[in-house]
Image 1 (cartoon, rainbow, N blue to C red):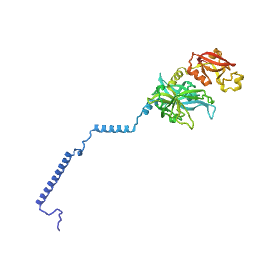
Image 2: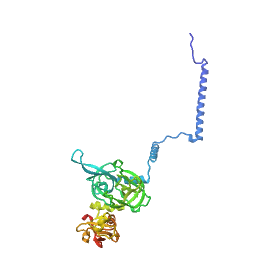
Image 3: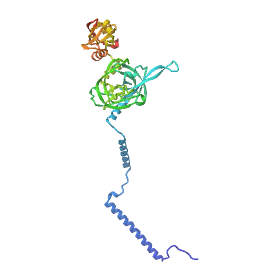
Length: 404
């Protein structure tokens, strides 16, 4: 039986010589390849492999990448910087009133509405909030919602219907931001402003709207008791920054993040858009100070109740008031309170006031505007009035309305 050997049957010496030839040929190829690669890297160094990065370089690269990513996603503008500065001082204000329970006669406290407010002062563990009078009107309790969502009970220090301002006091333990007051007299038309508040309730707490100063020293008629008779004329700033129910009492700030107005009202009709109003901070500051310190606004008072001549039927103007035919405007003295400036000066019921300090007075609105804006407690007011067809003049030394 034969034996099969797969290895070639050439002599052993020739096989060894063949292996050596193959080995040297391989080594030659390797060396040639190495020389070629070295030559390429020498001529084109950019083809050489990078050295291994150190741990510090890796960390630096990661930090740079993170910074680039953050800069790409974070937008910083004048508006965002102003909001970051002031938003923490704007709060929600909830008007709580006591009402009878539905299922029983027992009383329970319920929310009667919400608005906004601004923390303007922090002292001796207390924080002070300015808001609108109409936000807290009729409240038995008031609750303040801070920027972090915390709810803090507050006490009404004072409220003024004429300027629509009120001041609250609360514990300051959780208060971190206080508004910086600006100068509303330095504003210019077209200057950017930002409104911050809680439109339509606390669900939209801290909402931001932007606009410009659309008008300054605007005079807006106000019906305080909803009887369709104008009781007052508010002097306000006009802005096109969106102001909606719930924004009342909130902040109007400039691009420095300074408080320059207290958002108060808007014209709300289907044909009007972008007309909102704010109480200038320069006008608000003395009212705020008076409410904080005394609970009331000290204003001069005459000591009378009044009726517009325009509200009196023509027949009564002739028979009861005995007015000359050419006197068609003025204010009728309905009653005089004893021991007041009017009583001491000699004014009587049915006297018809037609001028004050030489300025014509055609209605109660003009009388209030002159008395509250032009006169001070202790000053003398000259009143011209008709009595039984005769023109008389009276001098009143004005006193504080709070003392009547």
